[in-house]
Image 1 (cartoon, rainbow, N blue to C red):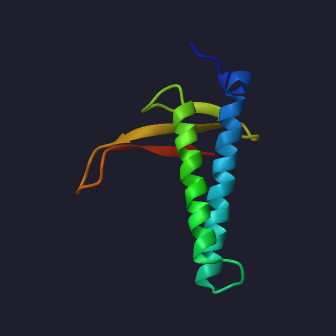
Image 2 (image 1 turned 90 degrees about the horizontal axis):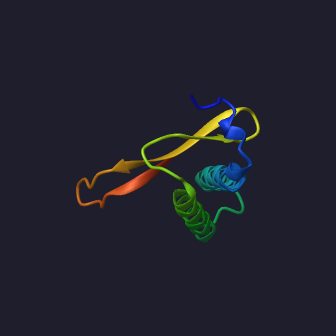
Length: 105
């Protein structure tokens, strides 16, 4: 039986840091998108594109770091066990098959 403390494994620290960076980038993109909708200062289409590219890069790095697919990996994001995983998404309506990153925190 796996320990409930497996998420504290020091080997998971690089993955945890990458997931936290991903969540921060996701939040920054959301805030910039909202600012652009509200026509606030500092939310140019170019900055939104850079934020999207950064988020996509982080997603690919996390996918490369995950030890498994179609399963949750418990990680420590600072407030107990969180989960990150990649799930297979089949090709639909011309979109290629891919893995979708999911984070539960």
